[in-house]
Structures are given as structure tokens and as C-alpha cells.
Image (tube, rainbow, N blue to C red; front, side, top):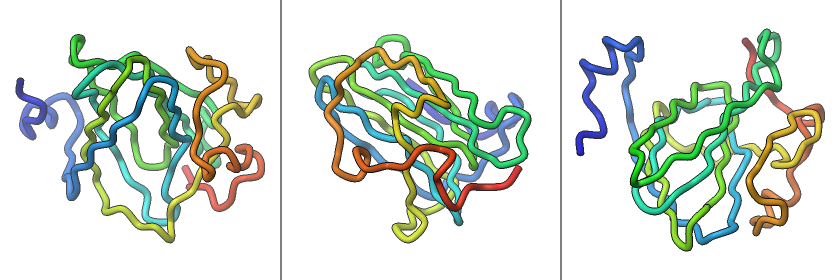
Length: 155
């Protein structure tokens, strides 16, 4: 399976330069996110290399007409769907199968000092997650709501 072809993505309007590839493994019920970097935002092209995930992008750019809106899709090793998470968006996902691997390409390097989180269940965002009692990391469990998150990227 071809997962990246710069010329084809450029023809589709995504002229991207990736600097880092990552892979994350999660077990059923694990939810990660919502994560973003500010400053030093990252765009991410995500796909599921094993199992199935519900993947979410949230526009958190202050001044955007779509601020606080989310989009979610099931991505899996079977449907081969990919999701583009632009810089300035928060990203999260939950594992729908016993084991799920998220593979993603980044437009900027990971920067621990810029790493931020927003609450996965923020009622102002209202994501319709397919699970109700996820397993969370301590960082994700303590994440602030969008209205309390600082700093946020600008539109």
C-alpha cells in the first residue's frame, strides 16, 4: 500500500513537507488527546496501521469561523482512510479494537515544551466519542477545557 506520494498530495492541495514519522500503539478503550503544540504547531497526516481507531480533529485557532468545531472518522487497517490534521488543530483518538496502531507524519518536530492538551470530553466541543469511560493518561485526565486552555494558536 502506498501511504505517501508528495506529487499526488500536492495535486490534491496539500503541499506538505514532513520532518518526523511516529507510531503509537493503544489497547481497546484507550483515548489519547486532545493534543496540540503551541508554539511550534504540527500538521499531522494520520492513518491506522493496525486495528481500528476513532480519530478526531478540533479547530482551536482563535479567530477561526470554525473555532471549537470537530470532525471525527473511523480509520482502520481495512478502510485505509487517512485524516489530515492541520497545524492549529487539536488531535485525539480512541482505540476501537483490542490493539490499534496509529501511524502519523508530522510537519514539525515534537517539542515537549510546546505540548498541550484539551479535555477529551469538553462539553463546549461536544465530541461524539464512541466510548463513554475511556482509559486516559494522567496528563489527558487533567487537561483543561478549551475555554481555559492557553496558549492557543491564532487563525
